[in-house]
Amino acid sequence: MAVRDIIVIPDPVLKQVSEPVAAITDDVRALADDMFDTMYDAPGIGLAAVQIGQLTRMVVVDCAKDDNPPDPICLINPQIVWASEEISKYEEGCLSIPEIYETVSRPAEVKVRYLNRDGDEQERHCDGLLATCIQHEIDHLNGVLFIDHISRLKRDRIVKKFAKAAKLAKAGE
Ligand code: GNR
Ligand code: NI
View 1 (cartoon, rainbow, N blue to C red):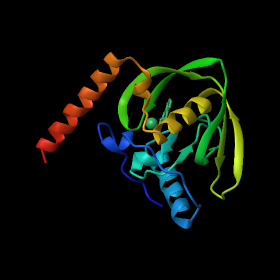
View 2: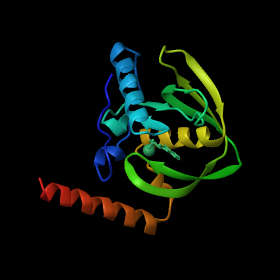
View 3: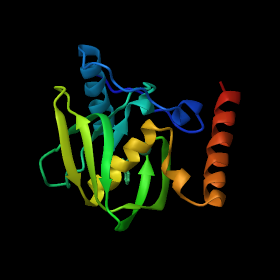
């Protein structure tokens, strides 16, 4: 059990495509545990393995509302098998792009197929924030960030700001 460092842009690893999990081993389960620890510590409502530097197709989410009990979900090799025609808009943020929030349009509902932590195949119909969050996380597995869904002008401004901050941090080392 460990809270790991979250990778932020412009680290190029965030643009890489993650590899499917071939077998659910103790190492895979340990990675899931670290991802939950890191997500709850941040705090965030989702985390993809690439955000802690592991190019593995695994995400964790917990979209339970404030006063409700926790609802941790671990999705291994997740696939969207259906998406609604209806689109919804959410103001999204990302732990890899701290303190930036922009409105993103995505299908309002999706059906996702995945393996759980025990290796059982699951299918789940998602709507609301959970549907948005799962699509945001699956994007991470494909090297896609929420800023890839906004205007180029806005995206370039955000990337520039983080590139400058990284350069200054490096100069100060
Ligand atoms: O914590 C997070 N909040 C959030 C809000 C709206 C849409 C998506 C998200 S996911 C984000 C955590 C994160 O960066 N996951 O990859
Ligand atoms: Ni994110």
